[in-house]
Length: 306
Image 1 (cartoon, one colour):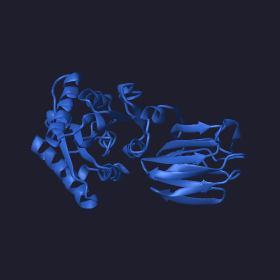
Image 2 (image 1 turned 90 degrees about the vertical axis):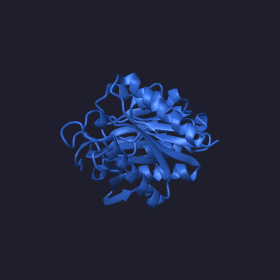
Image 3 (image 1 turned 90 degrees about the horizontal axis):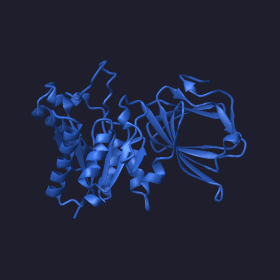
Image 4 (image 1 turned 45 degrees about the vertical axis):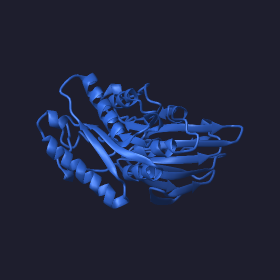
């Protein structure tokens, strides 16, 4: 049997920014498609590791008469063609519609998963699901998908889409979820559920081990948020950009870094970072973290803090 990744679309692989039009924003033409940073690369990584890539999406714009089903599916055909040509990723998708209550919408997605599994001979227990809504997780989990990661967006207006207990874990974006799902001996629950809300975004504590003097974190930073300008007397650290683009001030130098770049900060060196993309994610590696070892010269905030 084959294994697969079942991916929600809006806010998981493409942006669904409701603020752009002052209300509900739908992807009504291919020109509206804006890929989330790192989403295509994440799908490529899954595909290269032997996972078939499926999109399972609920499109209320069809229910509301804003677009026909044929035209909506044409957009997904173009998206699929784009990543196939760009990165040789073969995808399939199912567009779900339901005019009924939330449970009916969950059931519609479950049926879509089952139909894909039957067509492609998928081992659901060995497969992977990702979505930003609680309904995504309930649908994938209810269909029998083995591991399901919730993309928790702090700015979402839907309270039900925070702290989804039914998920095996949470992540700031698809790229991070895939990175850890494919890691040997992954345990999504322990990796993603321990986080701290910050002015800049969220801080995910992956490991803070005093015995080995090691600390690993994921720092989720939203555009326009700036961390404090601070330094550590004992801790040295490195930051690898795993999503988006950041501006860093390191001592008296300003640098711009993007996906894949690593920055090293020695103890005693003041530094600050700001997201230049809608969201940036940094993977921090350091010696053991201790809040008493953080000396702030400015405070975190919105806009240029320096």
